[in-house]
Length: 144
Image (cartoon, rainbow, N blue to C red; front, side, top):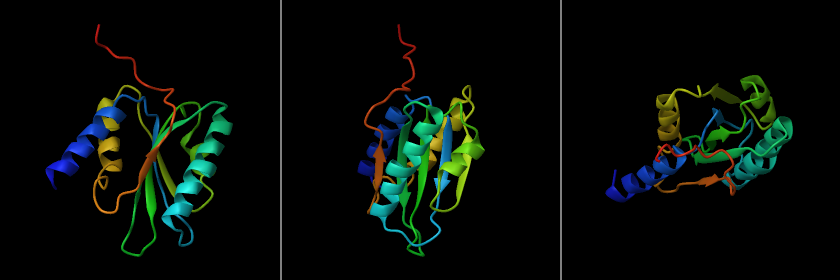
């Protein structure tokens, strides 16, 4: 891995560690879908349904990976979903199958692993990722 990719991933890890992530999920599609269509389904479908179900904004970050079958899938980090169960989050994904995992609030190690997993393809060609524009669930700094 080039030093540029390592620097990019390290920068994203530092930024994403500052968010109180509650769930991670992997989403796949039932039928072949372009990256553009998958992006739209994540942001305009999944995230909007989760915000409606939780009755407030949801912070998110996703990274799309292309598979050898040409069927893209995405890894998603979610914050602000603590009142939702994994089953409720799974039901919000209408385009195919998903696997949702709750991240324990006291386990930074689990969040760091989830962040590293989501970022594994970021910086490689082609990469495809996006994030929420407003960040409501940033962790409070412990520096005094």
